[in-house]
Image: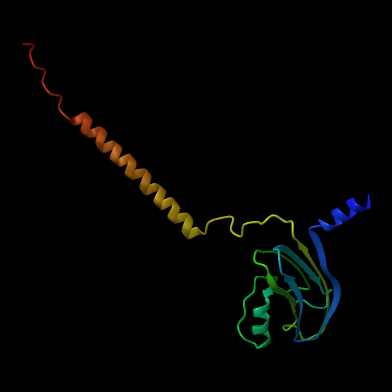
Length: 175
C-alpha cells in the first residue's frame, strides 16, 4: 500500500512553488525564481496586496530580462498583469529554462505586503497561443477564397457558353 502511495505521489503533476507574503518597499521590485530545467509547465501565479495599493504589477520574464531590468535597460516580458491591488496570470512555458516572477511596486509611493502564490502544472495540456487569425489574415483568406471560387466559376461558365454557342455541324445526307 505504501508503494502505491509513493508512486502516486511521485507522479503528481501539480507543484505549489510559493505561498508566502513578501514585503516590497516603495519604488522597488522583488522577484521569485522559477526554474524549469527539464520540462515545460503551466505557470499560475497570483498576488494580493489588500486595499492599500492599486499600482502593483506582476510579470513573468526570462532570467536574462531580469538582468536587463536591474540595469534599467529595455526588457522583455512573457506575461503580465495590469496595475492593481491583486492580479493573476497563467502562462504555458514551452521552453525549459530559468524564469522569474517579478512583483513591481515602482509606481506606488508606499511600501506593501504582497501575498504571492505560484504553482507549476507539469501535466497541463499545451494550449495554443493563437486561437483566431488576425483580421488582416482573415481578410486575406477570404479574398483568396473568393478569387479562386470566381475564377473556377468564370472558367466553367465560359466553357459552357462556348459549348452552347458552337453551331452544330449540318447533317450530311446518307450515301
